[in-house]
Image 1 (cartoon, rainbow, N blue to C red):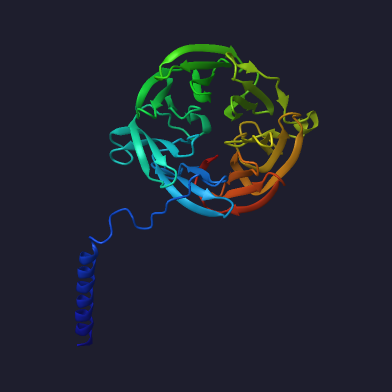
Image 2 (image 1 turned 180 degrees about the vertical axis):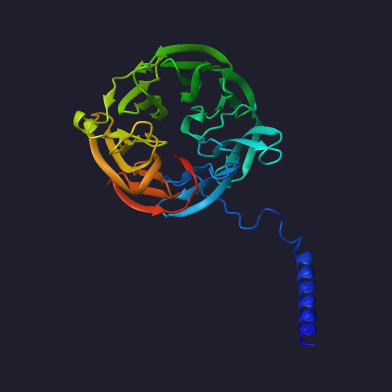
Length: 382
């Protein structure tokens, strides 16, 4: 009899719960529960961690964090290994997504999605050619022009090209072939450069409609003599590349033709003999306000392992080229980004999915944010 009483009471309780849910269904509009609008303009140190979720790789995310308060502010879902970029006006986060109709298979759809950085909701999207490069994300596989009118999407099929999306018309403007070259390094409002396999730099000029009007090639380095890392950093139209052995090769794109600036070394002869060399994924960062370059360094470098993470970060004065500080993280760091404000932070994603935070005025570690991502390939900030 006791069992029956419990059954009757349980059934009655379940019926009341269902009735309650049915009556409450119309009270809350879909999609409004728990939604938070982030401040605009954003905090100077707000950062965006690109997570490709290597264990599954079907869908990733961008985690939005406040490194000062050590808080996660929100999250944006992205498609397969989607490269992401921030607009200069700070209003938009772009992601070049790939989706399959059956999740891991089926009809492929490539789309450029524009996310509102305050609501973290999609503002608009544009279908793009099904050619977007499928690789670990990096800075210059997706970037906006200086005035945010265009977004450049790097394609690899394995022929290489750049899809130009007009953000005002919200449409694809054109696709520009860059055979033998990779990536798209924005220059001002209407140009972008690519790094070519023969060691040259190719610059493409566009008009206001996004159509190509000019193209040039400039010799840059000897690919038979050194290995240049394509994952550069820039201050305005000046880009800084490094070789895997530590030679910095800067280029000034501000003029009509690229100006190859004098190269310099990250390491002394003694340090080279001791085995020092740069390494990591996004292995460099730059602080424009401090005019300093930050490089992940290996103290026992091994050939073919230069992309490995490291806890050691060297800081260099970009004017004197001298090493001015050494920063050390508690765990190895893979990718870095420096904020662009007057009190900059260095943000480094570590091998455990955390974020290591340094105050660049003091070069001291101010804290860590554990488990903000699973496979953090890139950090973005303003």
